[in-house]
Length: 401
Ligand SMILES: Cc1cc2nc3c(=O)[nH]c(=O)nc-3n(C[C@H](O)[C@H](O)[C@H](O)COP(=O)(O)OP(=O)(O)OC[C@H]3O[C@@H](n4cnc5c(N)ncnc54)[C@H](O)[C@@H]3O)c2cc1C
Image 1 (cartoon, rainbow, N blue to C red):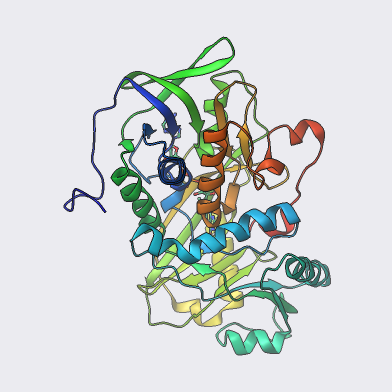
Image 2 (image 1 turned 60 degrees about the horizontal axis):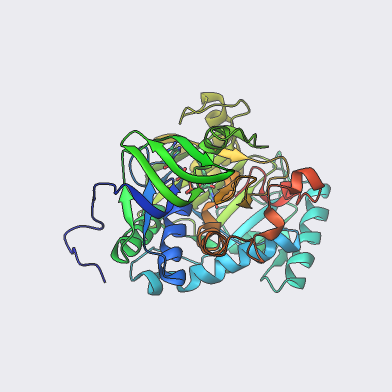
């Protein structure tokens, strides 16, 4: 597939003009470029990245994949993503370490239980695998999790999605990058977009740190920096950028066979293939463009983890890091057209966009290719904030992923 077996992708000089310029070589930007080439035959594409390929959230996330969102619109796009994940290693010809080990979402209060049972019902109506487990069943599935009624936040039950799981995030980025490159897409690193050229209401190119590049269409896929890019054409987005942190422990023998998440105590844990315990937390509450967060969030996260998993008390933290997540008021993304012709926007995936990468990329590529919304991303248009048709996924998406 790849003509350059020693390299995952080429490093070409940018040409002065492309049919489509994608801004941001994260997971969603790379997937967009890949599907433009693969599904629409549009190979005259450049992906412009200000830093290094996959240096943003795509390789900073905790890799949880699931589709058990509440509303029909979200269920449809996240389930489409999960179905694509199920064939993605074969499609890209690359090992993504995709592991469908199941995802537990714990309920600790009666309100949690009501919300979770409702979500299981909604998921089933949408054909998504979802189960409600009582504390005993949760304990059987995850024996190291404390389900004692004496716990400070006792586990009252959990939703379980067996087809959920994890994948190795850098492999996902590299898999898409390699496949897009092989189809002729130019991946340009160290190329910051500093301006967007608009003529007669239409996007016609971008200003970059490597000079001007003309474009038939411009697709912004810049996660936490989306507001800055949209601001270049005077577009104000309803997006807040926050730090979101995660950490890994030293390597341990396999002790955790599934993904465990708790919105109430603000921690979620899985064990990576190598053996690290991978732990995510809630967002840092202030706005920031720094890819790091505050220590008190990590302390809170570890206290919560030990509460749920007493055997983690002796585990050692190896590394912590942060990313910048782009959060919309309804915890749902923005994907589609903008008031500027041929300028497209894909952002607002917030704390949970990794799982959506294949569906985000494929439906957004469709939108760019056809200059109209795809049926799965139509509900996530920017103008829902003017019309009021919000898709409130705070229960399914907020802190947890
Ligand atoms: C700690 C953490 C844990 C998470 N856990 C999960 C999880 O378990 N499951 C899940 O589904 N999601 C999770 N997420 C969310 C997920 O990572 C993001 O929603 C998703 O990765 C965002 O899309 P992306 O990969 O394209 O973003 P990014 O990888 O951030 O890509 C955007 C790119 O745009 C580039 N860029 C920005 N401005 C410019 C410019 N002016 N010019 C050129 N390039 C520019 C950036 O450098 C960056 O590389 C997590 C996020 C974090 C930070």
